[in-house]
Length: 270
Image (tube, rainbow, N blue to C red; front, side, top):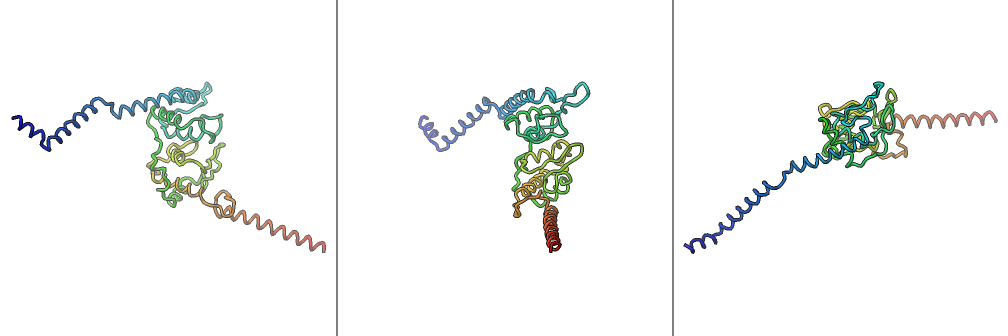
């Protein structure tokens, strides 16, 4: 009997069976005792939201209210709109471009140096996003302009954006003291976020109206325009042959008038 047991223990399959049993036991123990990934994510998210709530209370609540409900003064004037439902993308755009906190009441918030670092901006965005569902910060795959179609992006931009931002994204004046800002040097993420949140007088271009791929193409077009060389030395607003022709006409006609005046003056003296 002892020899039989000894033989079975030395059987090649015995070691494999023992190894499998040990692995199953260890795996079961880990699954039972280790905290789940979702719990870790929820804990991290809760911590980030709490941090964002504190930052929001200090820097934003005087206008937008402690819970983002908005504020109205005694005269009925809106001090700050409600942020419920604007989503993380709106916060990342407004704070990430320095438009918020607002320096002073004006017809339009202008781009200025950023007051918070990205970690703080993410925390405030998480807090505002926790108030109600809204547009999220775009995925990196839609910000990779190397995958964008520049030609199609140009068509989309001229159709949907050029009326306000100029055909090359140089911006332009609007009514009531507002303006379409110059898009030169703006990060792809912020351009995307502007399209899905519609800041100031800008309309919202939802993913149903302009797909994420279309937005990526538009951003790729803007980058290509900004990276175009200027052989003549001056960009002249990058408005194309109209501006170049006007410049040539003014300089050329000016020189011709000057030469004609000089010839007439010389002739009269003779």
